[in-house]
Structure formats: C-alpha cells, structure tokens
Amino acid sequence: MEEREFFNETTEMRTHTLTCPKCGQAAEYKVTWVVRRKRAQLPRHADERDRARFAKAQSYMVRRDDKLACSNIRCRKPFEITSLQSLAFLMD
Image (cartoon, rainbow, N blue to C red):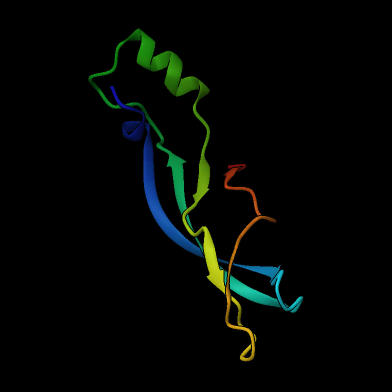
C-alpha cells in the first residue's frame, strides 16, 4: 500500500510576510502549499504493516513554490524562499 492512500491531498494558498533580499522590502506574498491530511480510517485492503504505518502517520504540508517575484514595482526580481520551511506538520 502506498503512502498517498493514507492521506487526502489538497492545494492551499497561504499568506506570509517575506523580505526581498535584493531591495530589502518586506511584503505579503501568497505561497502555494500541498496539504496532506490523514484520513479518518484506514483503507479496507490494509495488512498489519500498513496498520502500523497508518498509526504513525501525521498530517503535513509541503511548500510547492520555490521562487517568488518581488512585489516592489522598481525591483520585480525573482528570489528564492529561504525563510520558510519546505515541510510543516499540522496539529489536528
């Protein structure tokens, strides 16, 4: 059984305050995240190993965007998102 059968997957946009490293201006940016929430119950065709993996599984989200363009009209240069973690566990 594959890990994706344990989760419901959705895409969310979340707002974060980030600073452009080139011009130094802070602004609000929308960052895309893939959110994987643990299902309420295990699929029917699971065996003992799958039950153990499902018990340890946690809901989490993975950052999809790696680069953003600066919102400053004079700058507009792309920069990498280094201040946000690429993986975050969710508390349900």
